[in-house]
Image (cartoon, rainbow, N blue to C red; front, top):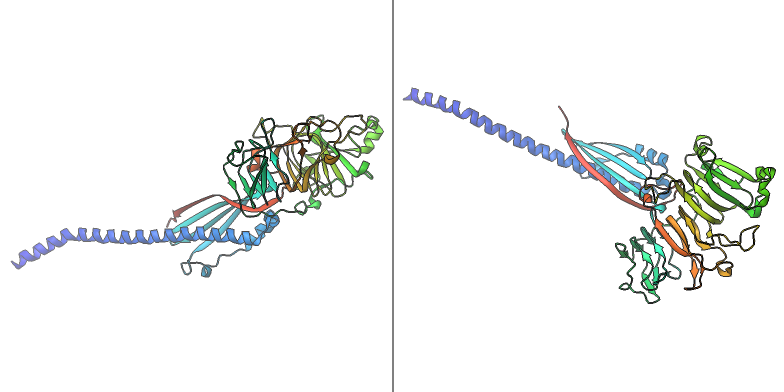
Amino acid sequence: MARFFIIFLLAATAFLFPVLQSSYSQKMRATDNITRDYNISIARNAASSYASMLLYEIAETFDSVDFQNQSKLNDYLEEFTFTDNNTAFSGTNIVSSLSTQDTGYTLELKVIATKGDVEATFETKTFQIPFSYYGLFLNGSVGGYYYGNEKFWELLDGPMHVNGNFAAGGVPGPQVTGNLNMTGIMKYGYGLSYEKWSRFTGESINTGVDKLNFPNHMNFIDKHNAYDLDNLFSSPYNSSLYIQLGDDASGNGIVDVYAVPYDDPQLADPAYLLANKRTILISDLQDVYGLDENLLFSQKYKIHVQGTLNGQLTIAGWKDFYITDDILLKDDPTVNPDSEDILGLYTKNDLYIASREKEYTNNVYYNENGVDIFANIFTGNSLKIENFSSWKGPKSRGAFRVYGSRSQHKCNATFSGFTNYRGFLEEIIYDYRFRSIAPPGVPWTDNRRLSDFKESYRIIPT
């Protein structure tokens, strides 16, 4: 009997041992899985928390100007250290590393955190919004009303931000197609109400939004990293420079700068032309003059500009700008959405749509039939119509159309009267490329958005 019991016990043990061993292994695997799940959770949370903390530190440390200083930003990121004692992950032996990449005005961050045999990665893209992003940016309330009736109307396309109130009038109102954000309130006039505003097709009208700071200076243009126009001539006509955009005989983009008006008859004299004209090859701005971006700058002179741009360029200055004729892009973005031609016009003062009588002519006026401007316009003061209060010449001149975007400190009236008016109707046809690209030297807002993020983890091979 005892022998039978021993034999039975041995047999049972032989039968049960694999079962017990399997049960033990399952428990160990379950424990390992719990540990790994815990490590995965800790590592992923650490990576995302560190990334969020870093983005917050950058936002607190860098203003809109410093943020675009990639060298300064890189120095800061190299010195940045994560302190576990200041996080919820203290004592977990987390190792973190950081890498950055700047593409345009998008900052890419990658944070890696490890816990045990788990490595978690959290990547973000933060979009620093330039002023060119907005179809219309106003640093103050609208003066008068953007207007539209059954016969004619103004057009505003693209995202809009107003540090103040926005006003629309007439029935069925101006055509507004983008989101309309304002820090103040929406005002209606000339019979218009929200219910009657059938030409508003944007997603929303948002009042009471946060103010975005407007740089009423030109510090965003580094004079020492721009081509200086002030020393081209000794004494330009009427303290003005006249810029003609175009191509040379080989099809390369150029900027012709004149010290006298475009129609000066003496320019037919080769010697006079040689003394009063300078030609700048756009590709030379970086290749020959060593500039980081294609920037032309004048602190002393008023700038008059017209022509067709072949390339990427920004013209900036402290004095008034005058648009004397159409400003076009050789590769038209309304035809080719992938066009790389792009123009910025930045002035510390006013930008005028020229309407005066042309020099050396009789009863011929600038922009008699309206004007098209393919550019991002930034004015430290306002966009105005030349001689608006003392109008001469044809009264019905159509519209001035900006194919691009506009940012300005103040909003002035651009036309008056509804049948026999003076001035120009106002149209903005938004260049949707400005959602992802911007002209050289563009000023940036303080508005940053997280445009994309992704997270992942892997098991570190043993």
